[in-house]
Image (cartoon, rainbow, N blue to C red; front, top):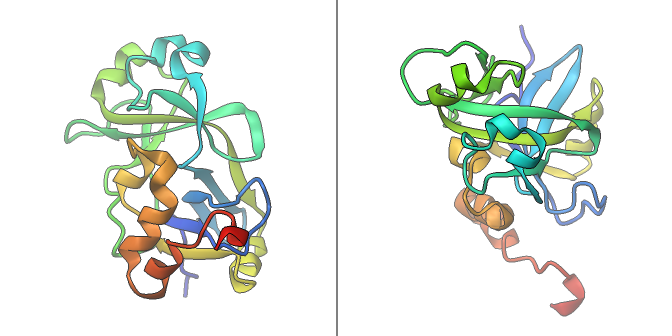
Length: 195
């Protein structure tokens, strides 16, 4: 029997996670493979760098805020793009995510965009588009260990999380909508000494 996959889930950093790379991070899992490991992008860290300053031809396609996002500490010199087609067909240069984890996830239509595809061909076919500088990666078993140690909450994702117009407030909003104890944790102060 296949192991459950985390693809399409959100990893929400618990208040215990002090690593500055992931403190209060919300990570969208792009790919989770029992052999290759896990790859995700932090969706709540916008940079003060317009997409057009890095990828000039893609500037008019990016979802607001139309800035680059810090996707994670690995491969920061490269870009990973996610998008949702605006129509019913899969456009050239776009690949859907495989093996969505949660049946509660609402990420239908979300996929990876090949930035080598000319934006004149693909750009008009995308309803939503976001570019991440770098990514978060875990080797086989590494993420499961971190989850077991209480570093991450694993929750269903929504496409609105990846393309949020207010990414800075995503951490408490995602926790709040889970209800119960996680909703209470959403009120945890950024600096616990101020509590």
